[in-house]
Image (tube, rainbow, N blue to C red):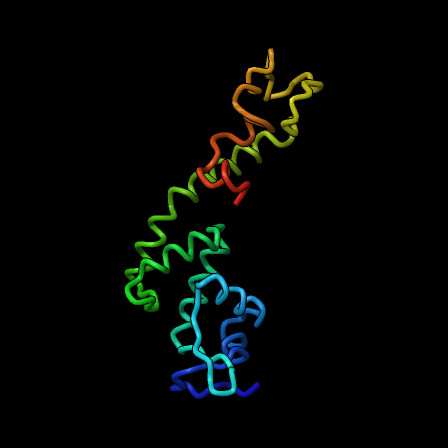
Length: 162
Protein backbone atom coordinates (compact mmCIF):
# COMPACT_ATOMS: atom_id res chain seq x y z
CA UNK A 1 0.00 0.00 0.00
CA UNK A 2 1.33 3.39 -0.94
CA UNK A 3 1.76 5.82 1.87
CA UNK A 4 -0.71 8.68 1.47
CA UNK A 5 0.72 12.14 0.84
CA UNK A 6 1.30 13.98 4.12
CA UNK A 7 -1.24 16.59 3.09
CA UNK A 8 -3.97 14.17 1.98
CA UNK A 9 -7.30 15.36 3.36
CA UNK A 10 -8.84 11.89 3.28
CA UNK A 11 -7.61 8.34 3.74
CA UNK A 12 -8.90 5.06 2.42
CA UNK A 13 -9.72 2.37 4.97
CA UNK A 14 -6.49 0.58 4.02
CA UNK A 15 -4.43 3.72 4.48
CA UNK A 16 -6.09 4.44 7.81
CA UNK A 17 -5.41 0.87 8.93
CA UNK A 18 -1.77 1.05 7.86
CA UNK A 19 -1.15 4.44 9.51
CA UNK A 20 -3.04 3.66 12.75
CA UNK A 21 -1.90 0.06 13.22
CA UNK A 22 -5.53 -1.05 13.55
CA UNK A 23 -7.01 -3.82 11.42
CA UNK A 24 -9.55 -2.87 8.76
CA UNK A 25 -12.14 -5.04 10.52
CA UNK A 26 -11.58 -3.10 13.75
CA UNK A 27 -12.03 0.20 11.89
CA UNK A 28 -15.31 -1.10 10.47
CA UNK A 29 -16.33 -2.11 14.01
CA UNK A 30 -15.42 1.34 15.36
CA UNK A 31 -17.50 2.90 12.61
CA UNK A 32 -20.46 0.61 13.35
CA UNK A 33 -20.25 1.72 17.00
CA UNK A 34 -20.16 5.41 16.01
CA UNK A 35 -16.61 5.99 17.22
CA UNK A 36 -15.37 7.13 13.80
CA UNK A 37 -17.13 8.29 10.65
CA UNK A 38 -16.49 8.10 6.93
CA UNK A 39 -18.09 9.31 3.78
CA UNK A 40 -18.78 7.09 0.79
CA UNK A 41 -17.47 7.80 -2.69
CA UNK A 42 -19.57 7.34 -5.82
CA UNK A 43 -18.07 3.82 -5.96
CA UNK A 44 -19.23 3.19 -2.35
CA UNK A 45 -15.68 3.23 -0.96
CA UNK A 46 -15.04 4.62 2.50
CA UNK A 47 -13.05 7.83 2.89
CA UNK A 48 -11.97 9.02 6.33
CA UNK A 49 -10.92 12.55 7.23
CA UNK A 50 -7.21 12.56 8.09
CA UNK A 51 -7.98 13.65 11.67
CA UNK A 52 -9.60 10.24 12.18
CA UNK A 53 -6.06 9.07 12.93
CA UNK A 54 -6.21 11.07 16.18
CA UNK A 55 -9.61 9.61 17.10
CA UNK A 56 -8.33 6.07 16.48
CA UNK A 57 -5.25 6.78 18.61
CA UNK A 58 -7.47 8.02 21.45
CA UNK A 59 -9.72 4.96 21.13
CA UNK A 60 -6.72 2.61 21.25
CA UNK A 61 -5.14 4.29 24.29
CA UNK A 62 -8.42 4.38 26.22
CA UNK A 63 -9.16 0.75 25.37
CA UNK A 64 -5.62 -0.29 26.31
CA UNK A 65 -6.02 1.09 29.83
CA UNK A 66 -9.34 -0.69 30.21
CA UNK A 67 -11.93 1.95 29.36
CA UNK A 68 -14.89 0.16 27.75
CA UNK A 69 -15.60 1.23 24.16
CA UNK A 70 -19.09 2.25 25.25
CA UNK A 71 -17.60 4.88 27.55
CA UNK A 72 -15.21 6.02 24.82
CA UNK A 73 -18.15 6.44 22.45
CA UNK A 74 -20.08 8.45 25.06
CA UNK A 75 -17.08 10.72 25.62
CA UNK A 76 -16.47 11.28 21.91
CA UNK A 77 -20.18 12.01 21.39
CA UNK A 78 -19.85 14.95 23.81
CA UNK A 79 -17.40 16.71 21.50
CA UNK A 80 -19.01 19.52 19.51
CA UNK A 81 -19.98 18.46 15.98
CA UNK A 82 -18.07 15.19 16.39
CA UNK A 83 -14.76 17.01 16.03
CA UNK A 84 -11.41 15.40 16.66
CA UNK A 85 -10.29 15.52 20.30
CA UNK A 86 -7.74 18.17 21.25
CA UNK A 87 -5.14 17.97 24.01
CA UNK A 88 -7.59 19.76 26.34
CA UNK A 89 -10.32 17.27 25.42
CA UNK A 90 -8.01 14.35 26.20
CA UNK A 91 -7.09 15.90 29.53
CA UNK A 92 -10.76 16.28 30.46
CA UNK A 93 -11.71 12.80 29.24
CA UNK A 94 -8.82 11.06 30.99
CA UNK A 95 -9.55 12.90 34.25
CA UNK A 96 -13.14 11.67 34.05
CA UNK A 97 -11.97 8.07 33.64
CA UNK A 98 -9.48 8.27 36.52
CA UNK A 99 -11.99 7.24 39.22
CA UNK A 100 -13.01 4.13 37.31
CA UNK A 101 -9.38 3.20 36.72
CA UNK A 102 -8.64 3.68 40.44
CA UNK A 103 -11.46 1.23 41.31
CA UNK A 104 -10.07 -1.29 38.84
CA UNK A 105 -6.53 -0.88 40.16
CA UNK A 106 -7.78 -1.41 43.71
CA UNK A 107 -9.70 -4.52 42.67
CA UNK A 108 -6.69 -5.96 40.84
CA UNK A 109 -4.38 -5.19 43.76
CA UNK A 110 -6.70 -7.02 46.16
CA UNK A 111 -7.00 -9.92 43.73
CA UNK A 112 -3.21 -10.14 43.40
CA UNK A 113 -2.69 -10.00 47.16
CA UNK A 114 -5.38 -12.60 47.95
CA UNK A 115 -4.86 -14.89 44.97
CA UNK A 116 -2.25 -17.20 46.50
CA UNK A 117 -4.38 -17.98 49.55
CA UNK A 118 -7.82 -18.55 48.07
CA UNK A 119 -9.71 -18.68 44.81
CA UNK A 120 -12.67 -17.00 46.50
CA UNK A 121 -15.00 -19.94 46.01
CA UNK A 122 -16.27 -19.98 49.58
CA UNK A 123 -15.35 -23.64 50.13
CA UNK A 124 -13.43 -22.77 53.30
CA UNK A 125 -11.24 -25.84 52.83
CA UNK A 126 -8.01 -23.90 53.16
CA UNK A 127 -7.13 -23.61 56.85
CA UNK A 128 -5.55 -20.18 56.39
CA UNK A 129 -8.15 -18.77 54.00
CA UNK A 130 -8.13 -14.96 54.00
CA UNK A 131 -11.75 -15.01 52.91
CA UNK A 132 -13.26 -16.88 55.86
CA UNK A 133 -16.99 -16.55 55.68
CA UNK A 134 -18.71 -17.89 58.83
CA UNK A 135 -22.39 -18.62 58.32
CA UNK A 136 -22.06 -17.53 54.67
CA UNK A 137 -22.55 -13.89 55.63
CA UNK A 138 -21.21 -12.80 52.23
CA UNK A 139 -23.97 -14.81 50.54
CA UNK A 140 -26.35 -12.00 51.48
CA UNK A 141 -24.29 -9.59 49.37
CA UNK A 142 -24.60 -11.51 46.13
CA UNK A 143 -23.15 -14.37 44.15
CA UNK A 144 -19.52 -15.20 43.49
CA UNK A 145 -16.35 -14.48 45.46
CA UNK A 146 -17.65 -11.35 47.23
CA UNK A 147 -14.42 -10.32 48.98
CA UNK A 148 -12.39 -10.63 45.80
CA UNK A 149 -15.00 -8.82 43.74
CA UNK A 150 -15.40 -6.03 46.27
CA UNK A 151 -17.68 -3.20 45.20
CA UNK A 152 -19.09 -3.72 41.75
CA UNK A 153 -18.95 -0.93 39.22
CA UNK A 154 -22.40 0.39 38.19
CA UNK A 155 -22.10 -1.17 34.68
CA UNK A 156 -20.99 -4.50 36.02
CA UNK A 157 -24.18 -5.15 37.94
CA UNK A 158 -26.25 -4.63 34.78
CA UNK A 159 -24.06 -5.87 31.95
CA UNK A 160 -21.50 -8.21 33.50
CA UNK A 161 -17.78 -7.38 33.74
CA UNK A 162 -16.41 -4.58 31.57
